[in-house]
Image 1 (tube, rainbow, N blue to C red):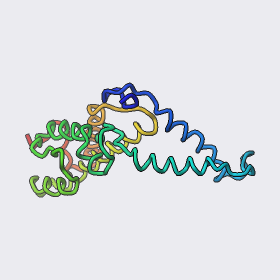
Image 2 (cartoon, rainbow, N blue to C red; image 1 turned 180 degrees about the vertical axis):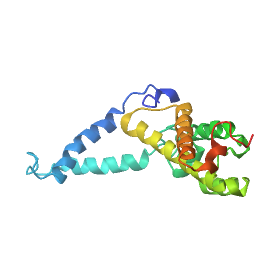
Image 3 (cartoon, helix red, strand yellow; image 1 turned 135 degrees about the horizontal axis):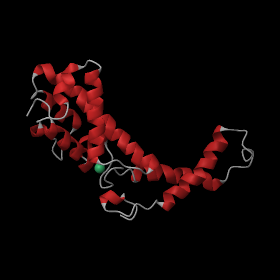
Image 4 (tube, rainbow, N blue to C red; image 1 turned 180 degrees about the horizontal axis):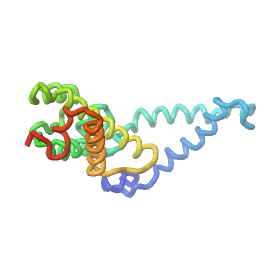
Length: 187
Ligand SMILES: [Zn+2]
């Protein structure tokens, strides 16, 4: 909880144990990938191999969702079940009048995608596919920003970025996406 992001109730403090492993392994990584570094000829420290094993275990055991830090980070969880991505989806679908398609907490992305597009007029289904990709791409970027830079955008900001991309596509001639612009035609 202490290391959870502040906007999820934590204190936002770095996990010093994991950071310590990462720092020590960075030197070992450079030693193995760049033989010119000064410390490359030194004998391998057995503790480094031990550290490698520990870090692999950490990645496997502690692969909690970077957005909520509450559940395993599977693709279904990250893109459609996580409280963050569900909030993005609900805001976006509400703005275009399709809130009835809002994914449930136990949805699987592929099943939800297939069943949802069947509820949309045939001529808008390709555009809906694009929207699913836009949302997934932006949630993924948000996840990476949180993981690697410690930064985070709000769901409102992520939705804004998605609508910007939709507007750019409409401007570029993909008129089918017009109905998925804010205040779209499904209301
Ligand atoms: Zn999550």
